[in-house]
Image (cartoon, rainbow, N blue to C red; front, side, top):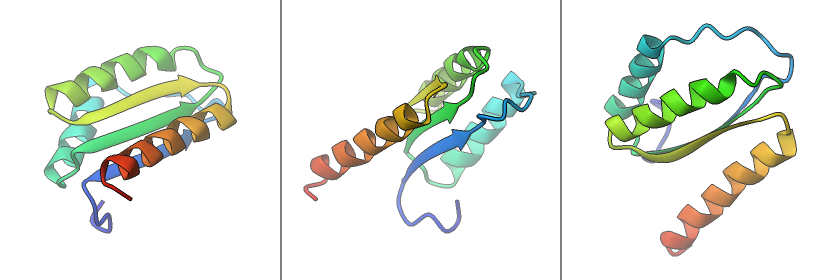
Length: 100
């Protein structure tokens, strides 16, 4: 995040290989606080995974965004193209709002 020159992060996490997830609520809070402390104010992310349990993680992480007053949206999907479209749509929306 130190090399990020804006207050925005857009990302796709590719877990199509279905690696086990061991994120706890404490881990989610830690990462969120690290992001907020780095000056990030907008966070948009999509996780690509066949594991439907990620939907619960997305709900927790989304609530954490609100707790930290970060603007953003997170999704989990099994479709990589959907994830890319989701992130691209948010990049384009932010650029339009900024007049770019």
